[in-house]
Length: 549
Image (cartoon, rainbow, N blue to C red; front, side):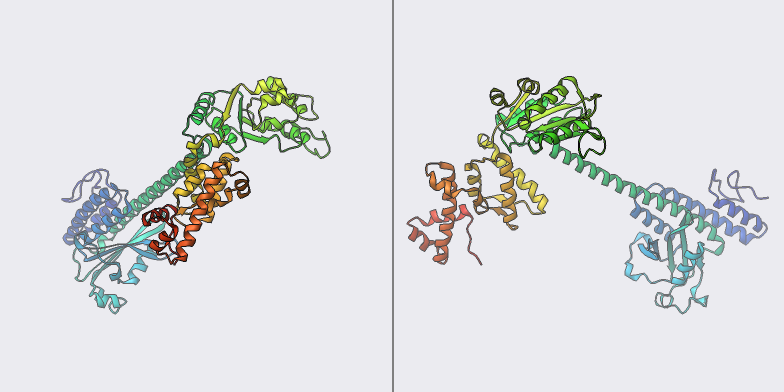
C-alpha cells in the first residue's frame, strides 16, 4: 500500500507535512500505477506540479487585493501549463461570464477584444464543475471547425472552473497554438484542487473588499453625521467674532455641563434657540431629548395640557391619557421659548414644577417625578415685565439663575459679513449651486442695513438673493433691493444707512443706463458724466457692469 505524502513520501516524491487533500488523489493514482514506469513518472511530474501550485496558493493567500489576486491566478496557470494566453472570467449576478483579466506569457497583459475562445469548452467546465483539457483541438470533432480554433490556430485548451460552496465563481481559460506536453488528463485533479483554492482566495478578497467598502461608507456617514451635529447643535452656525458673542460662548462653555436653569434674552431673530441647542448638545444630557415649546403660540389651556399632560376625561376631547412635555424631557432639556408671553395663571404651576421637580397631569391627583433642565428664552425685558406686574417676580428669579443676553445684529457689525458668508455656503449647498461671492457694493449695503429682524432677517435676505442670482458667480446689490424701504429713505433724508444703500443702487442703474445710451463707449460716457475715464472704469469695476450680449 502506498505511503501517504502527509506522513512519508511516494517513490522519490517530496514530503509535504500537513498537505491538502489533493495528495490523496495522487496517492490513489500512485497505488494503481506501481510497476508501470510511465505512470509513475507522470505521477512524479504531478507531485512537482502540485508543489508548485501549493507555493502559488500560498502567494494567493498573501494578498486581499482582488485585481492583483486575479492577475496572480492567471499568471500561475499560464506559467505552469506553458499556454500562450490566459483569461479569468467572473460569474455575473445576472448570469453569464465577463472577462476580468486577460494575460499573455511572462505576465504581459493582452487586450480583452482579442478574447476569442472555445465557448463549448468553457460551458462544459462551468456546467460540470470539472476542469477541461483538450490536448489537440484539431483532433476533436466538435472543436476543429470552430472559428476561434481556426483563426487563432488553437491546439491546446485548458479550462478550470472556480467554485465556492457549490456556486460558480468564474473560470480560468488558457490556450496555446502548440500541443501541450506538460499536462495530461491525469493532472485534472490537481487543476481542480487549484481552482478550488483560487475560488476561496477570490471570495476572501471580495469579502474583504465589501467590508472595506462598507467601512468607508460607515466612516463617511459617521463623519457626515458628526459634521451635521456640529453644524446644527454646537458652535458652528453661531458666528460671532466680536467681544459680545465671545462672551456668550464663554458662558455656554461654563454652564453646559451643569443642570442649572438658563434664561436667554434677546430680540427676535438673534438665535436664542440655537444657543439653547448649543447648551443642551454640549451637556451630559445630549443623548436624551431636547423638547421645545413656544409659550406665546398656544392658548393657556392648550399650553397647560402640552406642558403637564392630562388624564383621560379631564376635559372634552381628552379621550386617552397623555404625558406632557415635562415627562417627554425627563433626563433631558425643556426649552421654553417666549416665556414672557406665558399667562400669569400658568406661571404659578410652572414655578411649582421647577421648585419641586414634580408635575401633575390635568385631572390627576398623583404627582410624577421628573429630572428636567429648563432653558427659557424671551424677547422681552423680563425685569420690566415684573415691574409692570405682567410676570411673576418669584418665577423670574427662579429662571434667571444664569442669564445670557444676545446682542442685536446692528451692534455686531463685525459679524455681518462672516454671517453672510456662512449663509451663502449653507444655502448654496441646499440649492446645489456653486457658492457665489458678494460684490463690494453688496457688502457695503449689508453693512449699512439696520437689520431689525437680526440674524434671521440676514439669513432670509441671503437665501432670497442667492435664489435670484440665477447661477451667477457673484451676488450684487440688485439682489438686495427689497431691503430698502424707499418711503422711509424719502421721509428721513438724514438717516445715513438707507441713503447710502439707495445711492449705491441708483449709481449702478444710472451708470448702466448712460453706458448703454453711449453704446458702451467709455470715453464718451465719461465726458457726458463730467468725470475722468479712469474714474468711470473704477465705477464699472466696482459695480461689476458689463455689456449685455
